[in-house]
Image (cartoon, rainbow, N blue to C red; front, side, top):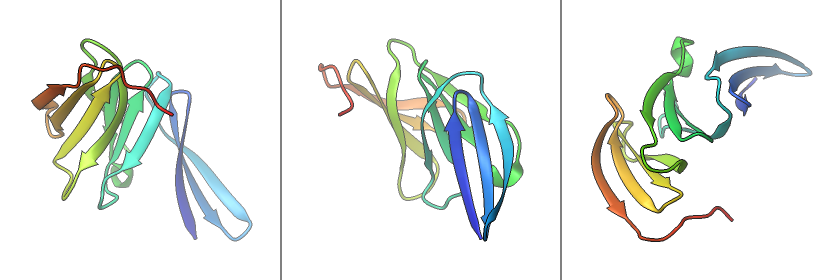
Length: 122
């Protein structure tokens, strides 16, 4: 028994794999290409970042729609991750080098730091 999530274009897919058979289901479509996805430490929440700079949350157990958490203001988000322990906060970094801490419940920006350097993925 194996469960997997996969993002392509703007769609989040769920795969349930057992032995040599699998079942694929579309979980949500956010209509923007997904650049990264990461599970919360307790695996109850997915954080989805798009190429356009929007961050969504998705609760796999509830099989609902993804919820838009925040949009990039000055530049696109390059990456986002959960701050542990817990699922209350996430941290993001923009291409322009701005690091931000967000409250996941309502998308409030709690803190930001500008690194004054352009950030790249290698």
